[in-house]
Image (tube, rainbow, N blue to C red):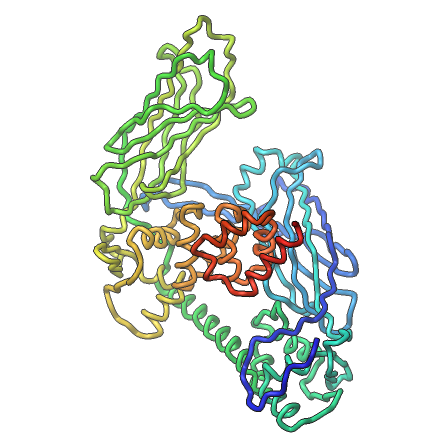
Amino acid sequence: MSSSPKRSKFEDSENAFYSNPVIIKELVLKHKFENLNGWNGKLKYSDCLERDNFKWKIGIRRIKQVSDENTGVYNVNISAFEVHLELIQSCIFGNAWLSKIDGCYKLLKQDGTSDHLSFNFSPRTCFHQTFRKNITNLFGDWSDLKNEGYLKDNSIEIEAHFDFSFYDFNRKIPNFTNIQIATEDNTIYHFNKEVLCSHSKFFFDLLTVNNLETPLLNLRVGEHFKLGHFLATMCPVPLEIREENHSFLKKIANNFDVPSLKHKCDEFSRKQLKRVEVASIRKKSNVIPFQPNPIVKNGNILRWDIENMNEWDGNVRYSDIIYTDDIGWKVGMTRENDKIKIDMILVSVSDMVDGKEWLLKTDGQIKLLSNETVKYQIHEINSSKCFNFEMLTYSSANFTMWDFNEYEGSNTSMTIEIGFRYTFYDFTSRISNTSNITLIVKDCVFHFNKEVLCMNSMFFYYKFYRDNIDKSSFEIENIEPFIFSQFLATMCSISLPITAENVQCLSELAILFEVPSLHTKCDEFLMKYYEINIPFTILYAQASNNETLMRKCLETFQSSEDLKVLKNSETFEKLENKTKICIFNSLMEKI
């Protein structure tokens, strides 16, 4: 790498030190957790697992939430299964090193196979061995794992598959490292002078303005790992600012006059202050997730008479539209292995609810009848996911397959009868003692809880608490009411799920209103379903600096036609030049 031309004036830049990362490929950790019959769900760790001179632990935990029937939301038990991967220690270097991880978790069945892969995980920050780092993923409902054969004999086996890379400042990189930095304990790091000067005004004045030509700098910054942390903030995968390193990094940023690091430390302080103040709000108000005003519709029955059952090949089969309370539904039936799956699909809604962005849950029973006699009593329906009337959605139940040989004749019939009730959540009506903020979005008025809004969104927190805006109403501009109602629904006790239809608008609002939890949900969804909309996913990966997601997208470009589709999309003009170059290079490697 050639040296950059000398500058006469310091300009803070985003130049990064490309320290040749050491990469350990295909690291596998495996542990079987036994005797879980008496497990209380608290965090449980494996023994220390050592691989390639690194020590790790795998942890599991159950998180249980029970909704309150008094709120109007029917009792639903959710027991989420959470997996941790924790870095304990490195045995390779006595000096500072930094790392990132990219991989996935697997749950293993008794025969060692698995068809249940977790979300991929890829921390986009590097970290030091001195501080433990958790990489956590949720696997979904604990009872589902039991039913699917992952939990037998009161044990569960987990594998973590990942690549592991770390930065080593102790090594020289030919044609790149051109300065050595020594600390009080005589540790010597190798770095790039131009990168150092582009971030630090102190080093710019020392090495560029004063023309100091020295291959070795002696710095009095205390322990060597503190200097390692400072250098790591200038890497392409930058060091994460954490409570453990914030104070000394802020001091170094001031001593060496590093504007970008000062800004990061100030941002961290701001977020920490927000957390403290939000905790105070929560303690005073005992806030729970917002419970919109529920409207319950009872006694709805969908009935589908099916003819020629003996000719059915098992492929999906739908009823005509069945109307109840001016809402149109379809009932679907399909055969999977030895089970019948029944789907209840919302397909239309009358003008009665047009403009009211309501959300819904269902519960009830499904019956299979033969000659008006109940042949199979169906499992209870209890769908706790909310969705909008304008979104195609379903709830389903599975049944044991019946024997077609029981039926005689060529005109065998069957009736599916679904009796259910559904609950609407209405943001347009005020709830006494709960709704304390009115949000005006174009011609729609939404009522919500200010504390819930502020605990989720840093944007609203600063508007209502830090900026002391004492208002009972707030106007939201340049957003469609339907989209904003979905945003509010993500903060409800039964929250809106991320789908292919809403991930784009919700990810944009997560950034606009600074909602970390929603951003994480969108991130996890796109890591799993990145191929749904490649142009948008590439733009999202670029904006969130998600290297793993970007690599997944690049792998989908197999021909010039794939590139043509991207170029014809509205997204293409929003892509940075370096992203376009990566796409082109990835395609050229395959042609």
